[in-house]
Every structure is written in C-alpha cells, then in structure tokens.
Length: 335
Image (cartoon, one colour):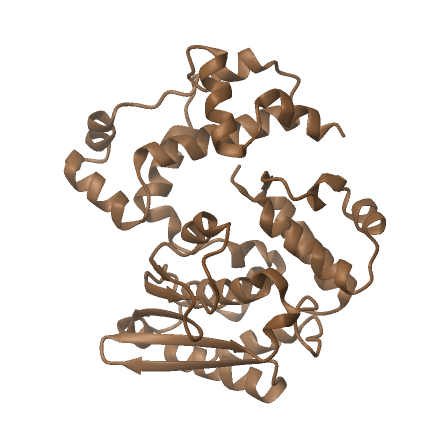
C-alpha cells in the first residue's frame, strides 16, 4: 500500500478548518487521529488522502475545497468531463474543458498552447493567497494531467513543470507526483509535454467516465499507464513475493528478469527520476508503516520481515525515512 507525505493530509484538513469546521468534528467524522494536524513529518496511506478529499468536497460543497473566492459545487467537474469527452482529439477535449471553466469561473484561468514539438498547459489562480501552502494549485494541476492521461489511455510523460513559488519542503513528494524537471519561483504554473499527445483520439466512453467519476479522486491521484514504467514493474515484482521475508535481488539479476542490461535498466530508472535503492527504501518504509499500524508485531520481527539483519539497522533506516525511531512512531500512533 503506497503512502503519501503527511503534508497533503494536513493541507486538506486545513481547507475545512479555514472554513470554520472545528478540528474535533473533522477528526470524529473522518475517524482520523488528531496527530494529522501536527507539524511533524510523517506519512499516511493513500486511501486516507482519498477519504479526506471526498470529505472536504462534501462538507464544503465545493470542488475547489475552499481555496478560491467562489465555490465550485459538486458535479461541475463531471459535467465538464461529459461535455468535453465527446470531442475527437485530446487537444479538443482539453480546449473544451478549459472553455467550460472560463465560462464557469474567473477564479482559475487555464490555457493550452502548442509550440512546435511541445505543448504547454498553464494555470493561473486569481487569489493564490486563499491557498496557503499551494496544496490546491498542485492538486488541480495533478487532476488535469491525470485526466488528460486517462482520456487517451496513456501516461503523458511530462517534459518540465514550473511552480510560481520557492521549492517547498515536500519537493521530493512533488517529484514522485510529477517525474520530470522541476522549476521553482517562476512567473506561473505550467506543465510542458510532447504536442504529439494532442492529436491522439480519446479511448474512453461515457460509461468509462461514469466509473472514473465514481472512483474519484482515487483515479485522479493515480496515473493511467503508470503500471508500465520500470518503477511500477519493480514495485510489483518485490511486493508480490510468496516469501515471508522481503527479498530484493541484486541489480544484475533484476535487470535479467526484465530481459534488459543493467545499464539500460539504470538509465530507464534515472529517466523516471528514481533508482533501485530509492524504490527499495520506499517499499520497506511503506511496509514497515503498514505493519506497525495494522498488526501486533514487535520491531525485531518487522526488521527481519523487511530483510534487515538486525533491529538497529532497521531503526536507523526508519528514522531516516520518517524522522522517528520505530518506537517513537508507534507511540505517536497511540496518542
């Protein structure tokens, strides 16, 4: 189970808090612990992020999550998607979607520009100060990238992304969400990608859209086609083992299992903004947190199940991943 930086959970909670919903009510209705409001670095299951987004949409009756001057009632995105999906190319789908929101609101302005081999999608918020921490700006950009990828059934590989603010503390998480070159403190928010994608025809039906919207925002957070990249293939290989102890083959054997050379696999991972060491750390971190939260297992057993020869090595690694020792982390979960 993938985990997400706690920054996003706290940012989503703040959307409701800024609109006058008390913290106790939020914690009760979402069945989340009050520690989510703390400032310490931790991680949370991706399902919790989906739950929090749905709660915020419903509680505020606002798809813009209280981060704009005017609300966007639930159902607006669905109406836009149903209207836009009727067109014959991704370019027309995006242009129709942009035109729809231009007619609907002045709070967010978008523009799709084709510049030779590149296409650029720019997004400008009229009142970015209403979105402290820039959570919704990043989420809105993610929504449009994922939606466009879903429409054509292919992950749209990004060339570059531009942010109108300095590099944030969660920039590593942003790199996972948008694996491409990142540029900060620029004039606006923008993604660029190959203009070849724009000519592709939609491969989705209105029935597909109904399922997509029903699963929202889970299907907006994931990337269609991501399962075909090297990172996802390695995660699948490591996570679907039959052994009780996580086994991570050496890099040469790993490359052979994918019928490529080690140099080719290393180059592909680098192009995805990751490495084998990083993938192994992410898996061990996620499995460790999952075991701590869902099972009565002591630290020594968790360390052994993740392939660590001793508990001390696991404790050092866990503190590097989360800024907590395993004992401290488990204690905080019980507060």
